[in-house]
Length: 202
DNA sequence: TATACGATCACCT
DNA sequence: GGTGATCGTATAC
Image (cartoon, rainbow, N blue to C red; front, side):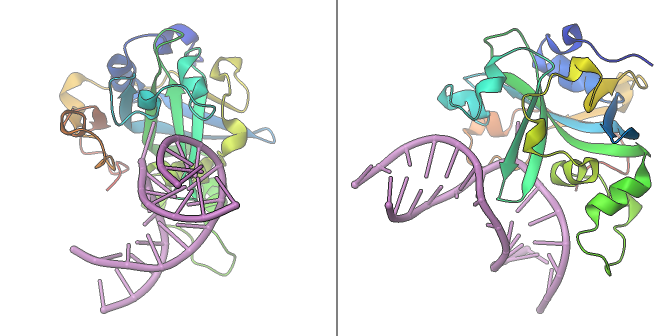
């Protein structure tokens, strides 16, 4: 298995969002691997995309989006959930791919423990471990300490080549949770998922 | 300094 | 189907 290099990410964001499907997202904590297959992504592309955090220009928060590809962009939403993105395109062009869902592969018990908020509470069902952008960051122990992380180092968080998803099995549609965006951006089919996969978000 | 709100989720009816 | 949780960030005053 091979770690995805910067040249994988330094391409058209729609291409990266499509090709990230099937790749393996790997987290390492205290020498233990936690991983999953990416089954759902969304593209956020540049200053012209009113749903993209960079559309209002450079700020301290979105600064990493303007930088090198293959870095992470992690931010907090609704005061409780962390979103995990990977920077794409050339340096200076702000764009990223949001990881919306993965299918658990390694470290399922660790994911269970991170997802269970309190002891004395029933375990989260396998199907609900990582089928949403806030759920998967919780399951992988991803928080703002992993913001601006270079994923080409092969430490803490990175991607490995997984399986190739054929075009016939890829579905596209509008992105989720961006009602505030301009209409042409709301309807843009920049969400990608694996057809029929049970771990795609609801 | 103050205020409004979001690339969500869990729990309720 | 609806709603409350909860806080960093952006924007306005």
